[in-house]
Image 1 (cartoon, helix red, strand yellow):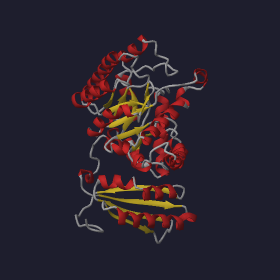
Image 2 (cartoon, helix red, strand yellow; image 1 turned 45 degrees about the vertical axis):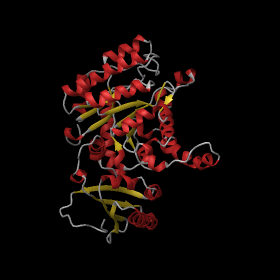
Image 3 (cartoon, helix red, strand yellow; image 1 turned 120 degrees about the vertical axis):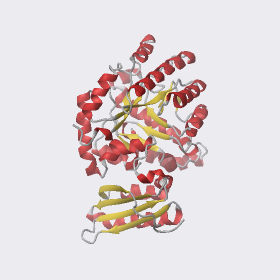
Image 4 (cartoon, helix red, strand yellow; image 1 turned 60 degrees about the horizontal axis):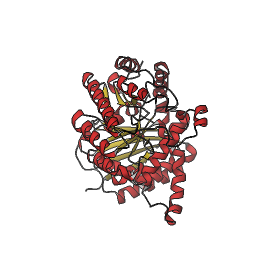
Length: 431
């Protein structure tokens, strides 16, 4: 059984496999293009899983393969039918399903037209984009008109890996795509977006990276190390890696072990972690066991269970979770327990990030650290931001990333307490 109420939880990584989609794939003999067959799916079975698992809302996306077989008009028809089916299911079960529209890429004009119809007419909650559509990778300059429109709509983009544009067929028969290539493929696509500065140039996009960030936590330091060398020789343009990264969210579908989550937190913040099941690609029994385990383990990792399973996703899709998200200032308290032998070094980082943030960021009204007299390993930080936008800018700054990465191994536990201020008296510096 779920550890908290049904009304709390959202699954951002769930797939819809309609009869029409299966038929279109089968008609082109593409059912095994990804190395394994499509699983069975129905609305009733999905709802039964959600009810038993304690999930209120699932965000539906069409899986791989991409329904494009060389005929743009045919693909547009297939995608239109799929999106209308998703909209009908969402309408028939209020509050239980959201959906992110499938687009007929690599035809950008057709994809743009379908995105407009899905978002403006059908009420889609975002779009799903494949890591690549027959060699057209995310970050490709041909996608600029689509990205510009999605940015204008402040759209949620859910990425899902597809078969790489070039593979060793003998190898992938022995090592399934999902075990390695999907992770590499996701990493490849996201790094290409960063190299193209997509997420800085289109700052209102909200992009969800699947499968615990894939290989990004491992690849990103190497990418950042190579960037100055490549730009110095004119092989790449200089981009703000941290600013791009601050726009990314991550679902925990897949093997969300403690070590994987700790590693993921070296490149992101707790507010950007989201629960994902990957239903129906894993059996309901296995998914419920994994979900129950994750719920139990998150507090020990310094994470708020309700944020990961509910609040972060609700905010991603524009819901107001706390009173301060109406545009008022954000006030929160961080309760941090530091390993005793690291407390001195930690306090140095905390002092530096507090002073730098207050001096350089007008939207940071207060960032005040305190150490417990009774237990010096316990630190409390009062954080006050002018609004949510100021907070989002703060976590994308170089000095915050330095603090986050530098103290990751020092922190034993972290608890974030969001508050509702009872008085409107200004705190700290005035603006």
